[in-house]
Image (cartoon, rainbow, N blue to C red; front, side, top):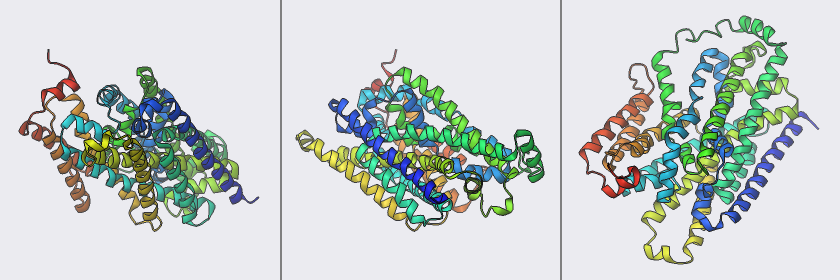
Length: 498
């Protein structure tokens, strides 16, 4: 068999295994948790995640193709500074699970919430909050899914030499199928597999670079010749403190405003699982960020920069030049795993926003909900909406738009502006109310869009910093100016005043 044929065979086996295992585990779990109802099983997996699964699904959801392709590519040209910036993401699992985890789990069980928007509906008692949140979630999720589909298909194309559409069809169809049929449990099961594959991929790429260079000492000597400024942590003065601050907001504390990671706080089994997930997740994120980005910084020692047409080609060039096809297939499975896990999580949450948050709360009548056939109808609608959104994203990415990297970062920033304050302040501030939530989401997202469009910067930061500041200010102002939250809701969330 040719190099390409062996590599593709490894990838197809991996993708098929994900599909089969995900659907099998989902079916078994559904039989065990049949008494918890379709909604609980399909959208939150029966709240049965253990520590390892919780950690891996959080890591796999947060990690995308950029962690394996884009980030190492930038580190190839910028050097060690990009490794330092990537390490901002190390406490991500700790931040999300420590700040949101326990209280989110308690509240979601009290209110039977299975989505972040479900939580917002109970906390703020406002249809406007739910509708604005759901619309923002679906639109920004579609943009993120498009960027992930395109990133994975381009990677497949550059490695195998086959047309872009082949790669898009191969993993796009598989991820749509297992997410649509298996729901949240299939997503978390495959996320665990994919998280482990990502760790394996990190070992493979770093080992390959050090081995080809002739050992660590030889690598350092060659690197100092190929890229003398690789260890400059300011990248020639281009990495300023405001720029670093922007990273801290976007991929650090700002992740508290990402619904796809926050919802993981609703699905774990018990406190022990939460504590274990904090440890496992922090270790795995730290390992992946360090190994992949340091590999990019080390790559000039064995790759001539004239061979690289763009930074995104650094990792594919390493794979094709130095790895045998079986090892290459295992490594390429890692970024494809990141793509698939991110897409599957976004897909199931986008479906939940349409069916659970909008249809069940504001379209379905009380009489229809009492009918025995209602649960079956919801099951069909949930599966159908998941499939439909997946098809829409797939169709949009057949002819990929330009500026896809910008679209991904834009979507991530937009989600943080829309959800950061309503989620965090709603959990910990008694005075938080619907007025503050609405103003925060609208003003935060609007300012983020305007600043990105016009290229406005505040003190050298990227638009995410001033936009988050605006969302916080408007949330606080709206909470003081708007009607107070009723005592019943406050008692539910904070207990009785002493």
